[in-house]
Image 1 (cartoon, rainbow, N blue to C red):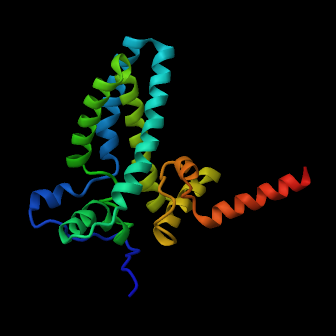
Image 2 (image 1 turned 180 degrees about the vertical axis):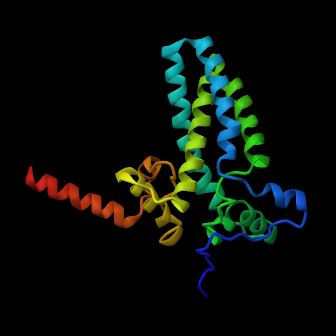
Image 3 (image 1 turned 120 degrees about the horizontal axis):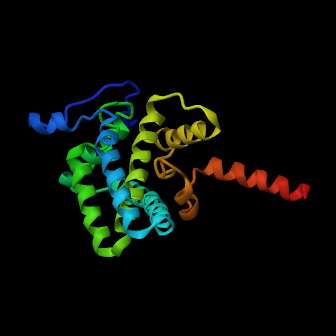
Length: 217
């Protein structure tokens, strides 16, 4: 039996509790409104503490750390296949619903009931792990998260222009409509290349191009 996938911008009720149901929906601009001020404040105090050069290194490190976290969470948490009924229910609430209703515009970015506690957790984790650089790393991490959420929304609802935009849109939609065991990176494919989860046809096309270039050389 074919798996159900809606191609319309529609939603489905997840919770009987009206409070939880209400806050499971979110406008795509909300994370930016909440976290851009946090990023600016942490960047200011971070750069004041470490100086510009070290601050930039910390910021870029945080941004790169997010890209790895994005891949790890998407591949091993969101695409974990639980065996129990409770586990299956939790998985559907967390990510399964997105694959069934990929164009649901109110559930494409992370709800604040999840993102704020997670941001708080990472803030203190970085504070105890990275010493005086933690604010720089955290602010870069936040930028990575906001870029991920924004790009993810755009891949499902915007006609993305330019070579990079078209690539990211097509790359993510391959994950939804061709093979959900590949293309775990949303904001970028770097970790897919490192871990060998690039969609087969993309890898084959690039290998073919490399062979042609090598033969001409």
